[in-house]
Amino acid sequence: MNLQRMYINGEWVNAKSGETRDIINPYNQEIIATAAEGNEADTQAAIQAARIAFDEGSWSTLPASVRGELVYSIGTLIRRDLQELAELETLDTGKTVEESRADMADIANVFFYFGGLADKDGGEVIASPIPNSESKVVREPVGVCGQITPWNYPLLQAAWKIAPALAAGNTIVIKPSEITPLTTVKVFELIEEVGIPKGVANLVLGSGVSAGAELAASRDVDLISFTGGIETGKTIMQAASHNVKKIALELGGKNPNIVFADADFETAVDQALNAVFFHAGQVCSAGSRLLVEESIHDEFVDALIERTKQIKLGNGFDENTQSGPMISADHRAKVESYVEIGKEEGAKLAVGGKRPDDPELQNGFFYLPTIFTNCTSDMRIVQEEVFGPVLTVETFQTKEEAVRLANDTIYGLAGAVWTQDLNKAEFVAVRLRMGTVWINDFHPYFAQAPWGGYKQSGIGRELGREGMAEYTEVKHIYRNK
Ligand code: NAD
View 1 (cartoon, rainbow, N blue to C red):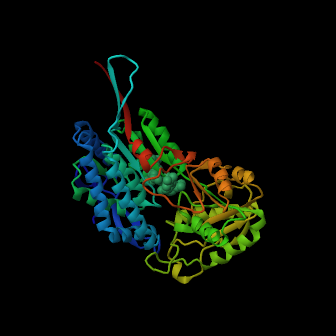
View 2: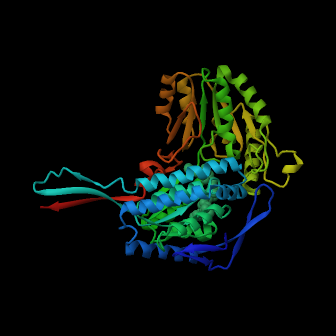
View 3: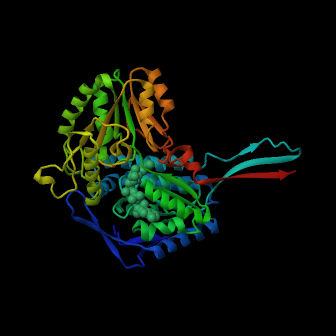
């Protein structure tokens, strides 16, 4: 696989800038690849290829079943190359290879789902109130879609965008995070292998400012779909306003995990840890705010601390490893600064709060799983997304208080509630201002169910029928008979 080229108009091309970027393994800081560093001119070339391919119309007017079959075939090749893709993802992100394998299986399913959905919405005839007329409502592709993805789930986030956009008949230009491009490049080799026509799917590599910003600003892009941080999302919204682009944003989260005293204790403890420490906490839906009923607080926190100390950090390729490193030195420094803020604010550091002493982990960007107790919702450590292995613990006494605390942030991505009383679970679930609520579980997501945020966690939905709808325009065709 040659990362020094980008896929534009059906060809692998060098960056016009002539520049490259080293890609670093976060486990040991070794250079694992050198990637092209595209700039504005490269992105413009990709946008023009996508524009011409869309305007010329052969992809959008291809029978939806044929488009769907091609999208489905990408999933088949991902399944064929699952192990190779999983290893690339682990090299690039540090996550365990077991997690990467699970990601790749989910990603194949995303292509299967949207490939299958491509020909399922043929529009509908509606009852016209005007005599001797006919009205029908059809869905059409939006046009050229710009897509920008983050580093935490590099290929998963890309798949959530590529599969529905292509299935709906759009043409695309995608820019993955500059620090984790490996698996997206590999999937473009698969896109080429299945025979997606030239210009329909284009890949640019490079930083957000030099290669990504053009996707948001260009008047030739009809829709921008972005997953990443809230501040970048705001910048993209502003740039997109130049031509009133359609916009889909998947931003951050500060997700509550609510545990009532009647919850299954052992499962709730294990899953509270999994909720926040999975992928070293670098998950938009991480359960980073634990709200635990006061009557079980001490017992629950003691169990959490005990089990947190057992979490094995290490090389993602080692089967004993439960958690890998942070993605970069800069990101670890951000997490460390939040831990200092938490201490200054008066939260009690119960476990972690530093880098591991293990000599084998000194070359990686590791940070110990960390728990703060005695937290209150006015603290920055409770309000702001840390995006690392840091859990805050608050208490509540009533279900009403649990809901109030859970909703008390600018975010609204996901949340969970643990109780054996399903009426209580339902009471909470309907009141949480979040796009996803889990009852007695944490983290499940799948291609069939919509994903996205209330409040400042985003605009629009990915996955499910709603995710496909984002990539379509609705047209009413009226005929006077
Ligand atoms: P980021 O905002 O720094 O970068 C995301 C992408 O945007 C990268 O490809 C980057 O190159 C690009 N970018 C940066 N500046 C840009 C600009 N001015 N114009 C255009 N593109 C630009 O985010 P990150 O650090 O890569 O990812 C972490 C964030 O992503 C977290 O906040 C996390 O919550 C969020 N996230 C959300 C979801 C979700 O589903 N809601 C999923 C995964 C990650």
